Length: 436
Image (cartoon, rainbow, N blue to C red; front, side):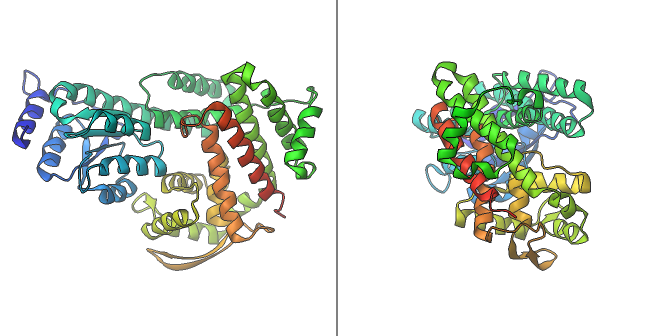
């Protein structure tokens, strides 16, 4: 099929009998699509038709430019070709995107892909695979998926905002019920399910009545945990209880199924979050009231482009690659945005937030930004850990939240995931007990 033929088919299919765009909608939600293809004629043809269908389009000719555009343009969805500079460049792009932006939906459209390559694209996290030779038959389904995906993103954003507002138990339960409905929605992209699961985790971890283990005999779990984590008596009583409960529940995981595995994962994550928040104490609140912190935030987050400072983003990418950290630009941007939005009222809302705060504000490092060079001198004021240990601590906190989320690492079995979560939780706590 020639580019001209493909453009003609797209143009014809996208118009209804009145000659108007068939899928044009008036929506307040963002609908920005990044189109990645090395053929400029094809990009132009698809971009025009996406525009007629009501989407904003951004173009990139290869994976390198695509990664840059994702960081600066923040698209809702990425559509990529497979065969660009190399035969499987699109697959590598999907893998890299899902590593750095796990909640970003990605679609593969290819003229040469095989069944195996399509299956691998899905394994890497692509939500949809479409052959260019079947574009006429598949374009309607593609538009519907794009529309639905953008609407889901907007709703999840609104639910997160309601959750952060915290306006009473009724609103909290309403958010919780809607999140559970979304989680059960078969049409919801796996990456977006990760965000939904994260929000549900925030709600569950803040329901103390469900985490009360004071009436349970946890002596067996306490003894086993002490063998694995000799510093158990150095952590908070609630942390001890949640750890003992988690490892005690592991004995019934095989019979209890997924619900028990889920409770184990939440217990380990809650134990670590409880301990780290106690160890940080009032330091985060104090950090956010300091004038130097506001200057630093304005340096590493550029509100003019509503994104990370370009030089800080480069530093972040280099550092995470050099030290193999479970941290990425998207996570960091989200947390810094909330810190700036809420100011001194900001409260770390999960393990990811704690990890980003430690990485950005608990170390000494030199940094070049668009506003000039700056020296970051450990504004959070933690003592007891070297800078390299603090980076590892931040990375493991984020990894723990990822491991707890079944949509981030679906390749792990539940049993493997429980073991990984327990080990990562212990490693986090080993760092935490050194903080003074």
